[in-house]
Length: 557
Image (cartoon, helix red, strand yellow):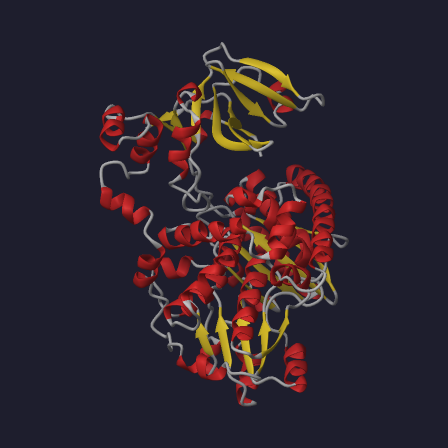
């Protein structure tokens, strides 16, 4: 979404003097050579190879932790007719990991059921009541994905009942884990995994462990990289070399259209699945898949991913739920923004707020106000909350300070969830508000490359896109053009919200920029990003305005 930023919020880098020489040496465009230099990859083939290794090499070097038991135990437990229950989570990582685990068990001839808790009524993690029902219905093997690391007390009873428990997770451990009661835990965070291991989402942990232990044929596993790509982009994990390789190959599998439900969803959203990229996942497919767990049951998304009976019906349900989510989220963001602006608050509670959308709303507000935000609302007999913090702040450490007042909590450095009894809310609110108001926000400058749009064509930008997939930890390159007082601004479309800004004879598309420009009549410059768009079967290069840079000195690097 387009935004206004001050000049001191960006760092402008200029192409190095030898960029043209490097371009000639490598046989590439000047923009590609400049981006390589900006990222420290231009002068070393070894550095470029490390940036984009082959998937097999990245997996061979992966270390998931010093408690990895190997695959023989699970292989022995997965046999024809064995009754398996997969217990997952309600976000995209959870439903993707659930789908992968279900398909694995089916490939062994097991009888498989899956269970995902209701976000509003039950919340995150393992629930004792459901575990009791699972055991009562009969279970020979319990596979837990994207949760379970800290559910020691509940899973102890499952192990004591003689049911093997395998947990594949990536959430941060706090104190003792389920490993202490005899469950098998594959979690790089709990086992001193290496840098690439701790970057994996839960689906990535499960997939990589299956691959390294040969629990399924290699081609079978590669066909399911579509699930890994979805989960990796959805969880906004850092795209180090391994995650980039997983997403790159996963996108290739998505484009083949073999997963019927995903293909139908893409087509329903107007996407050409053969050309789907990481932004299509983040902006189109993932919000729909997430909507089920936010406003209904996450089982809807699992049914789509598994291609169960009446898949098209479930696809339509996802689209409907996502429209509802967009409406509710937009209304809630407007409501809470007013309170935050008027009262300078960080912690807010709403008795009528839908719990399922609080995490996405908190993320938007955290980004918009550049401050930590905690939101909470009633869910049955408890209050469920979500905490989102800017980069450099540790959400888990903040919640640890109020742990004695919470019923349950957990998460990642930048995103965490919690539940609290209503009678303890005032204490939690006061202490969280104090902690969050004391947080020192690190000012992260936006790195941009000064480069004129008229020097970029389709071929040269395709070269730049080979450095993707882009996302957290590997951001899409942003470019900068100074406003020299000759930029022409014209309306775009008939609703008065969009404009084009002409720079050097090239139009930058400013979606929803008209109102922002009205309040910033003389910008210092423009931050923009090239995009390859497809219209009626034809590819075209567009330049999309990302930031309007107003007063304040621009830092040059």
